[in-house]
Length: 76
Image (cartoon, rainbow, N blue to C red; front, side):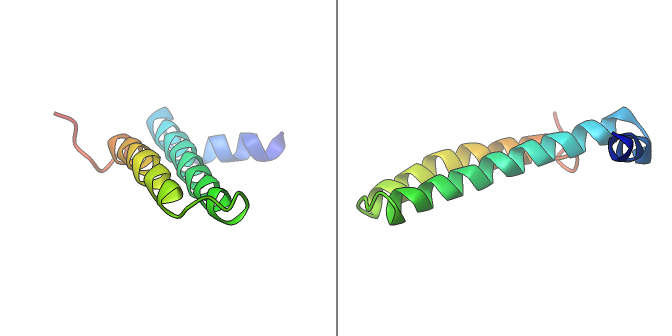
């Protein structure tokens, strides 16, 4: 609990904390997508096209979410 309080206090404002949280969530989602695609190929032994299609579709969605949440991208 003390570590959580220190980490939250290290951010200057709530916007930075929100951006860090959003980036962490998007990164976990993308990592999970990659791991599921690997599991489809090497554990389930499905044809290579299925994990590629899965990774292409869901990887695009996860990557798009990550870019949209990025503080460096201007919203119009």
